[in-house]
Length: 600
Image (cartoon, rainbow, N blue to C red; front, side):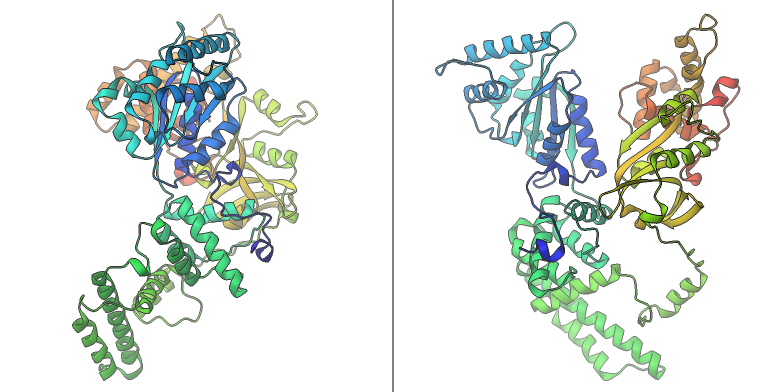
């Protein structure tokens, strides 16, 4: 309907769980990480909960599309089944034959035989149940019994439960405590934060084929209040707002379109709309609007006439006081209050008169330093080839890539004591890793390009071009960036050491290096001496888990790339950083060259 008008290839705000439209907020990434962790052969249960419309089903579809090759998934969407019906559905999903009149015992026997055969072939079996809050206690207990089958090394069945928050209450029942103890990973999916909404809208519009910003900041602010950050409500309201703008022939979404769309969505939103505001609240709102107008009139009069309140302002103030909460406000008054609230979030246009707080605001503006003038980023002029982008990245690490000897960038990185890391994420992901990065860009026609991101400070992105470095707006750069990036990190000395292995085994070198690092990290992050004493008594793996928890990493006790990078962020001053101010300048203490080299 409105797709051609706005230039969409397809509807950008469909509520169908299409994985292509999954915007990976930090919470969605964590939920997906919990699911991926759950299929690594741990067995037992993984529980993902979240309010209606937060994206649980879409996360599950994305998970299904990205599971390892050796994983087989049985997906059950309607769990309002008896124990026998659920077992039969499980058999149907995995292609397990059974007689029509099979008993529960016969079904379980066939499932167990299938799990053993799959394990022998190197396959891992996962049962995923959506809307799991509808499962009865009897069925949940039957599922627990299914997970009893195991070998000496692992359980043979992983069960993933996706459900609304009440699923947590169900699992907390005393009769289900055995099942609850078998949950190896659990995560609650929250709504989007307010500052994530612009990126969410930008992402979905981009996937649908439009790079133009259709929503102004004030419109986005109102949309967040109406939707409470719940993706499904965002999609429903945005879809109707686009339809409203199309019907008017307007190509930008305005606050009035959001208000009208929210009224149409109606009872789906838990927040008040015009038809749902209580008389008390509407009366208070109307009084606030009139009072605000009175103050504005008073301020203007004082500016122009040098003092004294006009009679109209006094009358307006008296109306505001006398109306009280008993007088219900009109829809127009409530809309005016919402517009006033939205206007607080909107930056003033040039030449706009400031009524309240004029002197203070002017003083602040005069004291504020001038914003640097940024060059506009042009995909055609500034994007680089893959080789050019990596050459710039290696230069930041003090290396000159010899492409004749090492045609592939990551092969050269290995030879130089570095490693490549390829990720998909957001600006926050870049900031967390805090290393210069090669960003993969997409041009207006879908063509691929790259850019070397050297520094990032506020909205100022320093990028390498064929003609030198250039400061551009990161917001402009994001128009072409869909989240793919690569960074380099430095191997710790026990991994990069190329001396005689007979001198000191790698395990011993690793132990010496980690002991020194952990002592420094305890001093940096422990809250007091008691915590330092407690952590120092832990075994090495538990110390690593403690540090991973402090840094918000996956707590697996393994010293992997992200753990090494965060250690380096805390302790090593010599590695290139994306955000220099985030460097923690702590010199290693008395541990010799092994510590001074560090892991970048």
